Image (tube, rainbow, N blue to C red; front, side):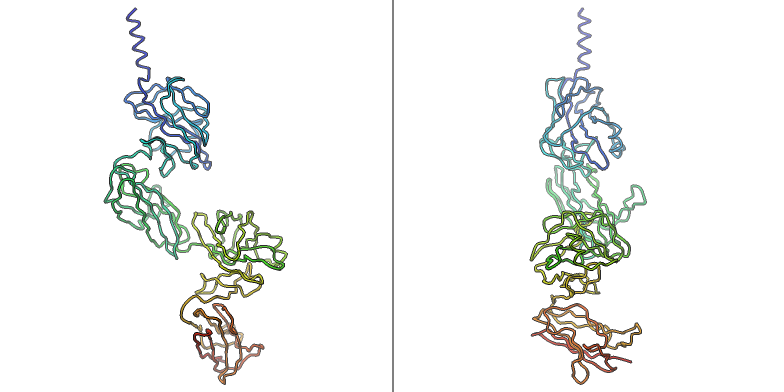
Amino acid sequence: MRRWFSTILLIVGMLAPGRADLLVNEVYPNPRTTPVEPVWIELYNTGPGVSNLSFYTLTVDNQTFALSGTLDPESFLIITPTTLGWRQAFLDTLEQTALTFLQLPIDLGIVNDSAVLRLGIGQIISRIDWAAAPAEGQSYERSSSGIDLSVDPTGATPGFLNSVTPIGDDLALAQIRPLADSGETVIQLTITNRGVSQVSGANVDVYDIDTAATDSLGLLLVSEALPPIDSGFSAVLNLRLTLDGVYRPVIARLSDDVRTRNNRRAAIAPGAEFPPLVLNEVLANPTGGLLSEWIEIRNRQDTSIDLTGWWLGDALSSVPLPSLSIDGGGYVVLVQNEFAFDNFYPISLGRVTAELAGWPTLNQPADIVRLLSPIDIEADRFSYFTVWDNNQSWSRGEVLGRENEWGRSEVDGGTPGDSNRVRFTATAEGSSVEIESRIFTPNDDGRDDELVIRLDPAPADGYTLKIYDRHGRLVRTLIDNQPDFRGEYRWNGRTDAGRQLPTGMYIVLFEAVGLESSKTTVVIAP
């Protein structure tokens, strides 16, 4: 009788859990929807022996499930409603670590839920509670101090040491943020020491990703030595590069340390040709018969661009642009009310317009207009501090040297869907008058028919641009004491009345009122 009793005690002792070696280690309540991922819970066996899962139950979302199977020491178990779906969604993880799976019809609440592990249906062994929703694709992890959001670059660490668990030397590439700056690319890197001691002598490299070669880092673009970083502190680096094209995929990599999962981050960076689209004209003060604000966007590229993924906004909000294409070098006019716009402007067969749902109403007399690219980088912005009467728009220069300057449209109503005609306000010190060629032949043969005059004067109360013959007689007035100016003027050799002038020498007089004047001799040749 004693032998049977001893045998029963031995069997029970082998199967019983012995102590609380199982932990609810990570929960994933807000999976990505693209691609579709399932929810999951990770258990971890901290003990030296195999855990018999049949002694445990798991309660989530007010449902209790009996567990089954075993879990080896220092091993992870993934509990999910679809093992196949999990394997498909986390294929990269399966290639790097061994996992045990248990398929149960669990459902996790995104907020105000818990995952509770019990011995049978009684003693609570381990639990994770969460009140706030994590970001899509981000888990809650167990740490030495409690429960924290994952800081892993992928958002979760199934089958790996939790990202919030401190270890020895552990520099993490916490953020990579590409920026565009006057044709250059700035790669802003935030590097955090998540380890328990200072790290010195580390390095960060940025590569141009070779998309044609699997697992290739591609061409090394820049390498930078890091300063010593104390535990719990961060360093921010701004690395300047010159990259060809509009967009370039890059990857930053830290020196290898104890935890390598957080040593890399990839991003799409803007190249020298970014942005491909720019804000080109803004009418924020519709008056009279015009009952719609509008904003024009220009394609600076030679090829067409789809607006999908682009956003337009003001200082406070933004809305997605419609899925339509802009031809190379073309324009699209985004309107607040398409019916009101079409009712005011004459029909133009080449003009492309689109009404935006949720139009970001432009404030008067000042506001900011922003154009956001599909790579989450601000492509362009325009700030204005006044609005014009007579439906005159704010217009961007399109002539050489004036592409980034804004002024008032010469045309009442602006030039939506067409090349801008702009009067600029002086912004630079020192007067400048540039004449492309002082000898021209206005004979309508298509060569040198016009005199091109470019202006870049100092701020003044007014501007005058007139042309005189060699006897001092006024023959043509291009600007007559006006408060603003265009960047470029053209003279076809005719008087104000349209009469063709004879060959000979003429004087171009430019005046910035109250400052200075300049005289330039030009010649009409036969």
